[in-house]
Image (cartoon, rainbow, N blue to C red):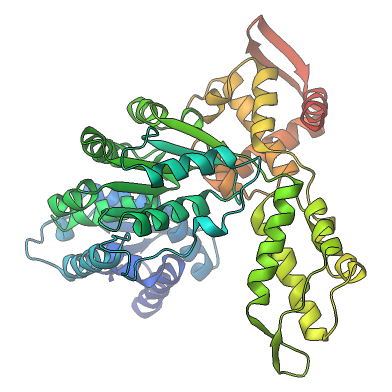
Length: 490
């Protein structure tokens, strides 16, 4: 990283800039730092401003949109005070004609990614199996339709469900089903060329291919496939250029009747800042939702996970390796009844209980479960889903849930979006980042600001006005919140 030093003693400012550079590397990771900063950015510290010079507009836009908060956080931590970050085109960097270390590193990273990246199955005997399988996927009323649709894709070379779009809340088994589908295709039809990757990986590989002028190789690899499986497709929200590239990839695969399977946190029409062309493509096939598991399914998940743990060993109190303690049905039922939101929560509680019993060299009992998991259960939120919150708020303000996910900023939509974020933060265990991503690709700072605005309105019991289907409406903030919470809870 090159440094421009101004207005402070040379050594202290140079050290400060270097410390900021090191802090940025820790924030974003060494690989991303080498690609985007090492020889492609120049830091200048002037009058409390950290200026980031880059060679061209493309890199400026990318670095600002992906790393601005990380840079500001690193600079503030090192300087001990707020540091404002600005971005500009540096003529010296822009004027370089020869290949830099950045290009070399980006090329090697891209080559490595193209070698190892998404899984490509050549034969059923190769080592490219993914971790999760359909055999370990617990089927219940909440996911049966999605499971059967995945089975149809596995069993038929040209399934009627193309694309297959699976959506649902976090921790309900979407990724498990997607990986299981890929593994089943790998075994059933060894000749099938398939790719499994996340939308973020697709984006990163596209950018690297663009930077290293290997776009054609990237496109051939993505498009000459029999099955393309993309996880977290909602990651493309708000990224128009990458959406355009994915649209062409999607069209190329669909035109030759090859299969596309996509997974998202939300229905295509509920993903904000997603192009209409992509939404239309996604809903042209089978769109199916996975709901939170019911009691019977949760119990079966617990049993299966307990059996998986039992197959291994735990270190007991005396340090020896022993079989994991068995979990009685009464404890399985207790956990399933009290932890109802997602699979990860169930697995975490079970693991904690089994580990405790193993370390104490005791059998697992219902009393032990009450004691060990008491704090965990006390923090468990009521069963309120973000989709219920959005539907309730949208109905109250006379709009649609899709408006909440959109980029619209008029008073009514903004107010509904803020109340939705506030209620979701209060009544679910979703983080601010997860809420923002779900509601149209907003960042966590937007969610926090929305929550603060609603808290302020409620504390002051301020008058709120908006435009509903019947015209202008006025109500007190506290009354609005009380009515929304009553509707959500009912």
